[in-house]
Image (cartoon, rainbow, N blue to C red):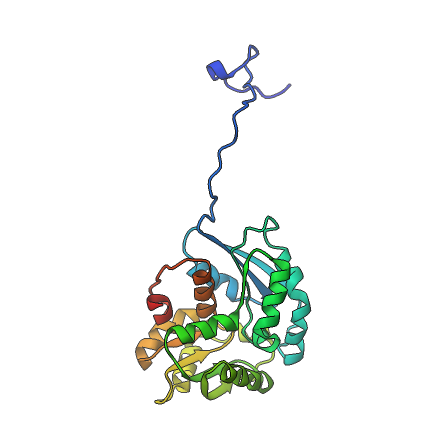
Length: 266
């Protein structure tokens, strides 16, 4: 016997069941009414997703897809990502409502190059603005008016050499670049924030306008502001710059406290 429904007066039939209403459903802009941002992340990634949610304001949607990669971050494994980006991007919101789509890997985006990354993301999400983590870093450094940069990374030297060349070609003077010689993403995600804070301070030098700590796997967002205050100059870290850039591309101009000058002033 079917469940009965309480009698609601004029909206019920003679048997006491609710009539099916012919009214049109009411819609609003949804929970992600301000913007929708998609991130294509590595299969090995364990840090970025948490930090995106931490820094995204209410009303901004975070949508994630992943691309296959072994637990080995080398020039070869990163270059192979190029062929996977379009398909991964296409898996997010097939209604075409993404505002921005970003490849969330610093080293991968500089090895592949912004032009190729953007083309592949655009194939997967034609209606979204394509960008990459390295594009966010460069935009953040420019927004802060910096030119001479000290750089730290967890990477092998083969990737550090490409990062130096990439940033130099983009118009920055890389005063020094120091890597921790880690190959596995699963090791990079376990480097402690307290170590990273000391690492950034050790990278600083008097002639540097800013210090950049590269890699979305590093848990560095939480220590940016404290280190900035200690060394007295801007600190850019990968996830901070990527999320800031994606928000600004999506038209979200919120200033956030606690995550460095980039989010507070730009």
